[in-house]
Length: 84
Image (cartoon, rainbow, N blue to C red; front, side, top):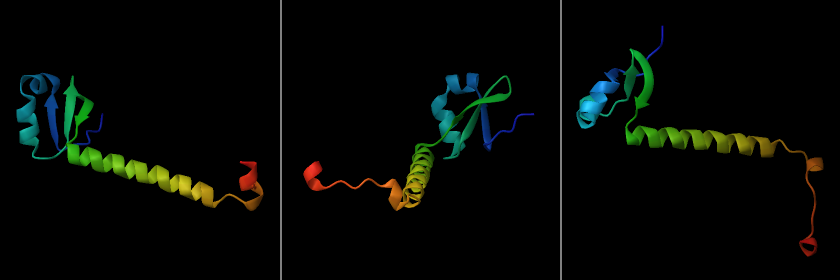
């Protein structure tokens, strides 16, 4: 059984008929788009999508910061300004 990660579902056929009504009826929530009763995509409100992307970006930035903080002095290459 496939897990559906949304409170609202709609078939692809229904979405094709009236995409604006699907968005309106979802009232700002995500919608699972079903194809043969299985989720094939999710329709996510723009504000939620932007927040998700921001969270992902922050995660990768924090991961990079953590990696750089773990560098040892021996990993660093000293270069003088004259050598540049």
